[in-house]
Image (cartoon, rainbow, N blue to C red; front, top):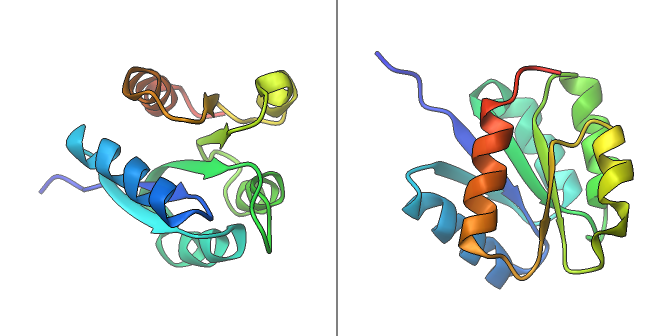
Length: 126
């Protein structure tokens, strides 16, 4: 029996979560959503073995994407993460140096999401 893996999509804005989930589902992926970093960490602790990739907003209330990524990396050093932001991508290089596999600018372009997701999923473990 083939194991099903999920993409975890985290954003504090409901409309962005729905858009991201819709795009990913239309590409054939299963998606679990969360509205902030704390929720993302809690879900990952329960279901991390099912999650192939995490896509999260960098700026969120309660726990931002950078802090959530650090905690998730403590749980699983091989976790695959893409950070997204509506702000300038100036930090993309420093994020990659911290183990993030990609950066997605908002608003999302389907072609950019397809490319980033495929590249991250296909990447060898860190």
